[in-house]
Image (cartoon, rainbow, N blue to C red; front, side, top):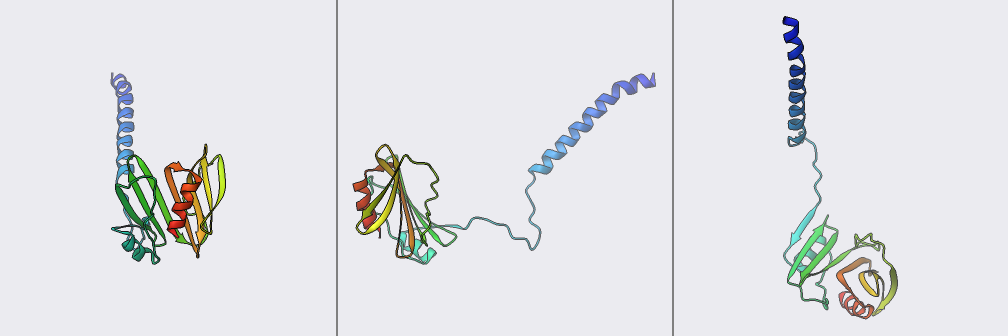
Length: 170
């Protein structure tokens, strides 16, 4: 009779052991990570600013607001990344524009999309590259005076509109 009871209880005991192990594993994996003393926790260095002037102070070079956007901005966010890249994000009426400036000549747009059309544009002596689809360009990248620039528009714009915006930035 004892054997019969043990045979019936053994699967139940095994199930309870598996359940306990699972609960312990879940609790252990969802517990907050402890940073050991003396260790450095890496967090992206992003700092918000209140204006283009304050953003300039954070990154150490002049940054100005973009004039002549194809929409009226209702919200403007100024962000410094690692103290070396300035970003101004404009939004309003369902549209967005993102302007970036950083030292150097590399593409700082962060846009890795493939576009149907790439076109070079002379904007008041500044050589820019426009990228877009179906005759509307959504991204412009260029460099001047030791700085890289990029401007992206959610709805895009025609090449002549880009020329006026770019010439007004540098």
